[in-house]
Length: 137
Image (cartoon, rainbow, N blue to C red; front, side):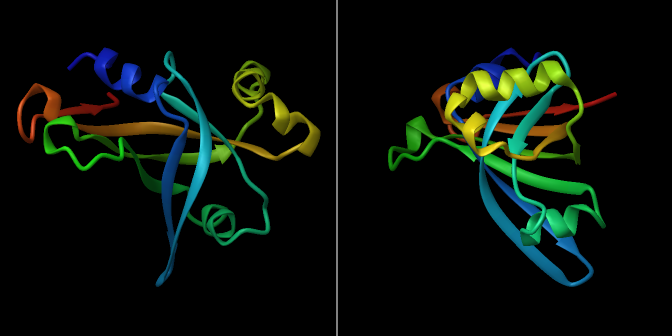
């Protein structure tokens, strides 16, 4: 499946929910994101003292979602993803994040990347329960 529909959806949103785990402990959080299409990568900011980052330092496999909040069934859209969470070192990706959230520059946040390896996109605007799956080769 072409990523164009998924990328278009991600361009319209800016908050993701992220789930992490380590041993028997789970964590979920919401993060602002910038999305880079060529590498299917989310760029996020978060402090190392959070539970989710402490999990990630021990288990970089994460899952998450981006959803359109609506009560109208025919308009429901949502993306579930899985990927690997890593420290961000790419200056171009850092610029992408600060272009999307210029006010974050004053906070000097630690930036991270989530390299997606799986997307499941549900789009009821194309028919009830219509789903698209993408997996990295």
